[in-house]
Image (cartoon, helix red, strand yellow):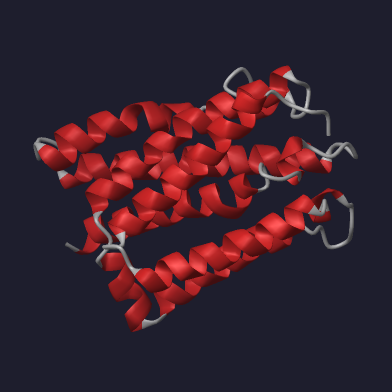
Length: 215
């Protein structure tokens, strides 16, 4: 992949750190959680640095980025201890976490400008996920801090933003399957988008939706 301006890497890495920090805070500073994330990040960073994910294989190696977090989420939802963990996450902090979707979309646009991802994956294409990030501070303030938004409104917002997340995931999968040219998403550090940021955003929505339904 061609060299990119330093600020592209810097903004993306800071976004990843911010997302992890907010999720760690939402989990009441759980040290086991931080250890799991750290081990996962180190493993994926090593693989990404060695261009593991840009090699076309069957099945695709990208499954190693997406499947383990999904399996962990399913396990958490299946066992009592996992459900307790999810139910104890702080919804307000999880709501603020979605603001990281703003710099993510900006980075994706920069990657498009440098011709390392297709336009369809940006807000100039069919990716409207930035709306989730832009609305998150207002939902946090009026819904969590002020308590002026009812549970139904918060539930609908989370479901809508979850749909936007699944939309860009589907777009990315389709775009990757339509070309043999490796995207920037396959290179370090951008492989941490599907390997870290997307799972954290997904977990945040699932936890918020579950809490809104049961409380």
